Structure formats: C-alpha cells, structure tokens
Image 1 (spheres, rainbow, N blue to C red):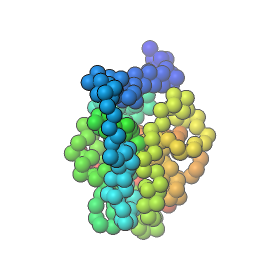
Image 2 (cartoon, rainbow, N blue to C red):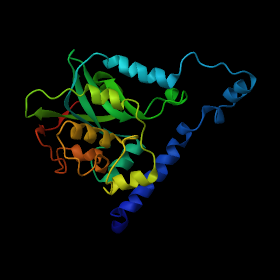
Image 3 (cartoon, helix red, strand yellow):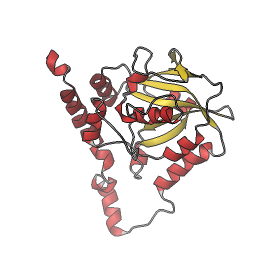
Image 4 (tube, rainbow, N blue to C red):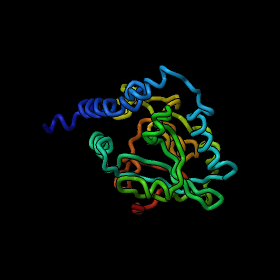
Length: 247
C-alpha cells in the first residue's frame, strides 16, 4: 500500500478517472439530460438574443475596463470537495487551488483565477475558464479555507498586469489526460497556453512579470507549490510574505 500511494502514475489515474467521470455531465449538451428541453427543441428553436458565452466574457471585461491592475499576492485554497481532496492527495500538498490577488487603482481587489462555473452557466455552454471575481464574493462563496500571501516587489509598486489579465480572460481549463499527467509528474517542457490549470496561469503571470524563470515551464507547477511550507517557489525581484488566513 505504501508503494501504491507513492506511485505518481497510480495517483494520477485515480484523479483523472474521477475528474472526468464527475465532469462528464457538465461537458455534455443539456438536451441529452433534460427530456423537457429536448422536446422543446424538437418543436421550435428560438435563437438567443445574445451569445451567453460571449456575454459572460464581456461582463468580465466590463468589471475591470479602464482599470490598472497590480499583483498584490497569491490566494491559496484548501477546498472540502471531492476534486479538491483528490488534488491535495495526488500532489501531496495542503492546497487544492491557487489564484492571483489583484488590486485595482480604484482600491478594488479581485481574484484572477482558472475556476469552474455555476451549473446554470454550464447549461449555457459556459465552462471552467480563466475569470476574474471580486475578492469579497470569492471569500463569501468558497466552501473551504482561504489564505493569502502578499507579494513584496523589490522595485516598489509592481508592474501593471492589466494587459495579461485581458489577454487570458476566457481561456479554458486544460482537460487532456496526457497533459494533466505531465503536470503531475512535472514533465512538461513547453506549453502553448491555449488552455490552463490554475497553477500554470499564476506561474505564467509571474514569468511574464519577471518574478520566475521560464524554466521549469509554467505547467510544471502544482497549487501547493505556492504554500509557505514549500521551498519549490523561488522568486526573483520579489518575495512572498507569510500566509494570512482570510477564511
């Protein structure tokens, strides 16, 4: 049993199997699961006035339009759900998710992250993707523990991250099993960034700001690598402060 628990391939297989099993419903068309919806579709089709996917992304952009965004730190999440438990088990870390804490020039604070969407949004074709959410909303709605680690920029105020945020908003979740396996065992050599995991988004931003080297690649990191207890994260031109519990 000890050998099995230490076998990364076994751990990934468990994670991947359960993850894809649990998300299969969300990735299928709603009409395949809702008989009433299927019947209605056969009778008449009324196209929506707007595209829900585009409207969701546009609402995200409007939230930060015209605002300057700087990195205030990272947010670490210790979730209670099954997927969160699997992530922590397979990576041998205490955190299951990571995001970026941003501060706008208006004083507002946001969480920039790769995260899932609500059930009603999935029914509209809006699936897990890079998104931005007011920090207060994240704290109020997250089922688990949240801590932050403030970042100290060696050159005073951190650089503007607005362009990066706008560029990658809406980028979907990485779902390819082989890519998930390569991330788990830190075997990724390069990435095209057409998809993300939560940790690869954060690392890419840090690399873009010059806080991390490009090697190892951004998709070779795990959420727990940002924890205070690990020595994996070696920043340059910046430091991460001690953890502070937000929830």
